[in-house]
Image (cartoon, rainbow, N blue to C red; front, side):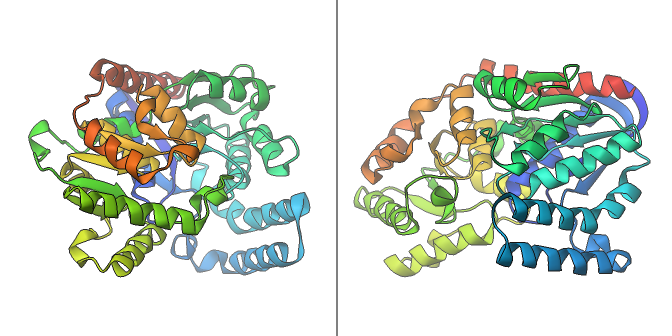
Length: 397
């Protein structure tokens, strides 16, 4: 650990109630502090809410909202994206200029180099341009890499954002295949940018939250992770909302048939929790079969530590379970889950769209408990993540 009297802006996602986003932020903060003493770290929301923006930016918020409504109701395709991008700039540009100008470095800890959802590309380009104006080096840490689409204006915006010379380091929690996409499709001009495959920062959850092996209960409880019903359709798969709901119904019926001990849980998102409420009503189950929404990372960790094994639907339920040594069976609705499964050499227990059969899933849940992770591999991934952050911070120091 080296002394470093510097200020770091940690860009995170703070306001969609997904504990996975909080785990990314808190674990990345832990790793930065592990690298350097006397370093100030502030977590800054990628999409600040009204309270964070305050009355100072009320006119900007109103104008931006009007542009978003106009774009969503009247426009299509790339023209729609261009207008919405203008709205993001109006809403956030002055705020981020004021907020970021006095920092010595910026680290994005949001997990996805993506453009198709959540307006990430708009914010990436905006913040990186501000960083360039004030000569603040940028790291985009442990990003999953979205498929390249040259016909999407937002994809080209990502290209501009990452090729900004102020971006000094981009790491991916994906594998070499996705690293090649980053290098050959996205990062075409910024040849001095350091790129590497690393582990997700949440692999450090035990250290960040001071969890020891004695915290893990010896129960026979199986955790069934919930996810909103439209997730597969939204990510280009053919499983409808009704089909996903029926999959959950039949998994529960099979668990009950085998007299296995199980419970439903979520990562904190209301849309996911509502699926649990619908299942409770449909199957006339006691409310105790649906655990309360976790409000903090500690809540989610406590939930996971009570399980023998987990059916993971959200990525960070899977990653945190892995970090805690809890066996997982995963559902693949996006390449980031596939890449994670391959990275930890656990692909046999992650199911593709055509494998989502309730009997197969319950069979795997019974089987997976007897398997253990390769802790040497886990340590290797954790150390690569730590090393990449250390190398970036040496630029600052």
